[in-house]
Image (cartoon, rainbow, N blue to C red; front, top):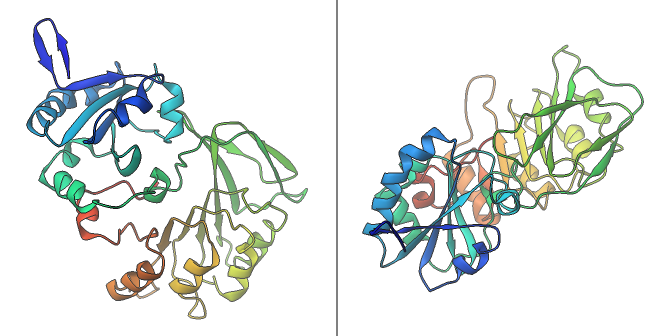
Length: 305
């Protein structure tokens, strides 16, 4: 805690140089707020966070990171929205929430208790579209002719940064510090296979997040994207053909951390039992914005782009 003008403050300000040491200064869990001087919601959160820090000072340490003054730490954890809260234990990130005021509740403390013994979680597990490691510059290779129903977007790892729309033909250079979002759709009624064939020359780690809007996503379609083994997030906005199950898709991508499975034409959504069975086999996977732990889900962690 710090002393400011004779008033004790329980929220400690840190920067790029002092962040790592602050995470392991003692054996308490650490709540980190990413904030900025210009951020209105951050200013409204400040007194609430201070009260939270004082109330739970015996078990939780609260630190604040100015996103503008500490760009390295901000990019390191893929923070793109302010305020953002993260929970660390033993220097490891466990929880990630952009719904700060809702997170600072009894549910948040319950979630802290629920994470006892859990390690190795990263913000990408909550939202793979925001990878915790800022990636370097890379090149994507598409066919020379673009396809209308395939769109590519670069999302910079900076708070409030604008997304960049890119072409999907020839070589495309992805700027350093950006994730890649590829959206593919069957909007002309001819099926999605021609569009997915357009992705055949991409490297396994070229795409971070893939969204497919098509009702004919079957075995052939899955095989045409299986080579994108580095996918962190896959969203199928319409239910796949019966030949492809949520289990098939989850097993196809070893790095997948979030899977969105759309409803059938009749509006039937993936049932709770299927989600539980998939998460039993893939504990780190978020399915339809749902965690395997009900306590963690109650915190309303960011699980969608």
